Amino acid sequence: MSTEIEYTKPLPTIEPETEEYWKAAKRHELFLQRCNACGEVIHFPRVMCYRCLSEDLGWFKSTGIGSVYSFTIIHQVAHLGFESEVPYVYAIIDLDDGARMISNVVNIDPSAVEVGMRVQVTFDDVTPEISIPKFEPIS
Amino acid sequence: MSIKGKAAIVGYGETEFLKRNPGDRSNYTEYCRAAKLAIEDAGLTKDDIDGLISIYPLDEEPTWTEDLQEYLQLHPRFLDNVYRGGASGNAAILYGAAALAGGLCNNILIVAGSVMDPKRIYEFGLETGTAFERDFDSIYGPMFNNSAYAMIKRRYMHEFNATDDQFAHVVINARYHASKFPNALLKKQVTVDDVLDSRLICDPLHLFEIVMPCVGGCALVMTTAERAKDTKNSPVYLLGGGQQFDRGLWNPAYGYERSLTTSPVKLAAKYAFEMSGLGITDMDFVELYDCYTITVVISLEDIGWCEKGEGAAYVEETDLTYKGDMPLNTDGGQLGRGQPNPGIHLMHSIEAARQLMGRAGDLQVEGATFGLSNGNGGSMADQCTLIFGNEIP
Image (cartoon, rainbow over all chains, first blue to last red; front, side):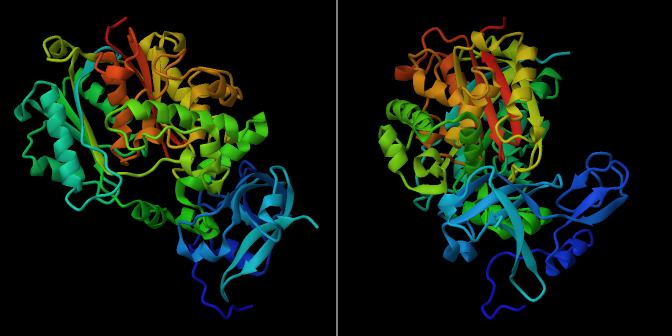
């Protein structure tokens, strides 16, 4: 899916250790790493497990379901690319799979978002190459 | 070996804080003028300075300390460049004290300042993120530290049923002190309604709960406890210091106990108190890094002043003024004075020295003997707690 309008927000750079993550996101799958040595679930992707320092890491597909751990409604932006979005929700999501990630909560009035709210992943196809995982209330 | 009581602050200086650079202030004016004031205040001459630590301006390179040394033609035998976010100033004081105690130098100058335009500070935050911050944080539109601390405040309010009204009292106290402090920019006193009526920047953080970046420079001079006996000012001894580094600088989602409401201040303060042999009840005042209201509430709890979850109610119910039960941020703090980042990193310990030298004028805490200063960097990631006293217990 391509976008007609130029995307002006920051984009990720594809690094060797993050390539699988972004490939999966393009397929609308949220991939997380799991350490094959100690079992730790890891996000964001790395070359080494921060718990046991093993480099034997594998990927698995997350259910994409979790809870809002905390959030803020942003009214004033740092990056001008987000100016048309205000007010928008920037949040920490605790995935049921065990990972914690920064994301946006979308498809809901920001004033209705609550700590603990159950959410599921949804993908925003921002360029032909990049789809960004975001979260929406579980329908 | 402990460095308790081995080094002392003997002089300090601050340039006039300004909301905007009128055009004739530069990083060199702020660093050099603050340095000169501190050296003179210590009763020393430039040639007495044989140690230099600076916290480099956000818009300069880490080689800034060498540039400054060349610019002022200093001849130090100890030189360092410290960057730990808002904990930099206190960390520099701790490392400076260690250098003095270890015999690496005799008189050390520590200096920091800023002339950076506030808008540029936010751009800077976006430019300097590491690859993983860009890829897994910046794509979601954070607003620098404002959004990080807003999430910390939201979580705190959720866990402990705290209210915006309670947080407003941190601002009321800051503005009260600032109204009486000469070098403060936000002298207008405020009410709870004023704070809650100020616009939401990152909900639940209102404008008045967030520091205002400004122009200014701060410096201090430390010497060995031996030399401090003969100096112009009464010495302010460093009695304890502790640090803890955790979480990301910008992003609070990872790190300390996976909690947003318990911070590494807890360990930094514990180490500082252990070194000093003193406890929280021995403190006559505290100077806490107050980049946001929530930072003060969590820091108060984590230094042991009140129980976890009681901080917000405590700031509402307690007289935090210089004449009150537990004087807090007696110069107005950053919320009352403005934040010349990174000059601000030294401001809280300078105020501790001002109080302990008995030079705080209208804001003097009567009989102040011991005080605490905390430096906080990133999203409550980098912490350095210091305990000072005008006597060595």
